[in-house]
Amino acid sequence: MSKTNGQNERIKRRYFTYLKEAGRMSEASIDTVAMALDRFETYTGFKDFKAFNTQQAVGFKRHLENQTGIRSGKKLSKSTLKSTLAALKRFFHWLAGQPGYKYRFTYSDTEYFNISFKDGRVAAARRAKPCPTLDQVRRVLDQMPTGTDLEKRDRALVAFVTLTGARDGAVASFKLKHVDPVEGLVWQDGQDVATKNSKTFDTYFFPVGEDICRVVTDWMNHLKATLLWGYDDPLFPTTDMGFGNDGGFRALGLKRAHWSTAEPIRRIFKAAFENAGLPYYRPHSFRHMLVRYGEQTCKTPEEFKAWSQNLGHDHVLTTFMSYGNVPTHRQGEVIKGLKTQ
Image 1 (tube, rainbow, N blue to C red):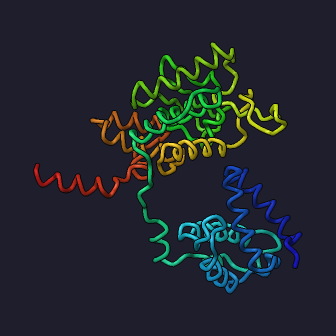
Image 2 (cartoon, rainbow, N blue to C red):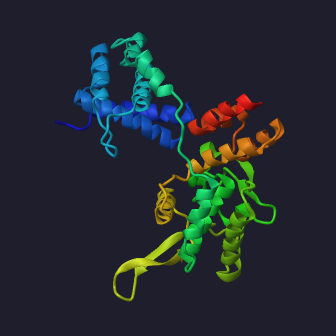
Image 3 (cartoon, one colour):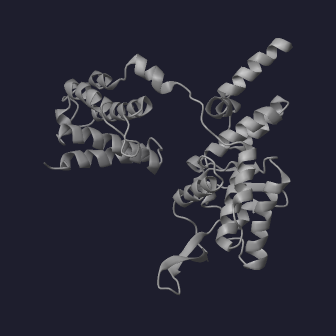
């Protein structure tokens, strides 16, 4: 059975161009759409999109409900079902207006990709996101070795994400020139830093402790004063791999180059938490940790607005709705504490 359809591939290329140029979508978002279309084509045996009908949409929904994730081995989550079907609905809605497809199916036919109200509520439900505490982060930092340049880098990496809440993609692209350790300021310049949606904003070090700040400043001093690196060099350089004296392939030290992806950062975090005897928390979970810390620290609306902006959020509600869920145990403490007031 063929795994491609030439006509489908041509119209998909047009659609991806439309999403990029007119829809202003990122490459990562377009890749997600491409995955949804590939799922659908695999289900239909790569039939021409012109053969689309409501039975295909209904059948695919039933098919998708029984699929399992490649990594988890579990049934796909409701949120995955919703996002996949929504991507297909938008595609076929666009396709219904294109030459050669206009009279093959109608705009209303795409409504058959809708998820049920029940599943939609499950998919949209906000769930508490696990995140570490500052005490746990300090334990991780205390357990991390600092004997080599690579070990110093790894420890400073964890400390830097704690100080800034920067996304791992941005962290991989920072240069020394983007950080002013004296002012405690990070310039997240969307022109040369991989920020979300290429947004530009300033981040000041969060007040999480001078001990954590010192880990980062010591690392930057080591790069500049000891290794004689310049301002255009990476803040967190990649590992230089090569052959050791025993002929084996191993890490030799630092290389003056950026990581091409954020995956090495996640591996460093995973190893650091496991070494400290703690469950692994992704770098992104540190943003949740900082929001919870800010909710306890900030005393005025202005203070929390500044805290929110420091994370790169234009609106405080983004911080509250996306990151600000009160943990269940804390919810109980707050409610019970109101009895004594």
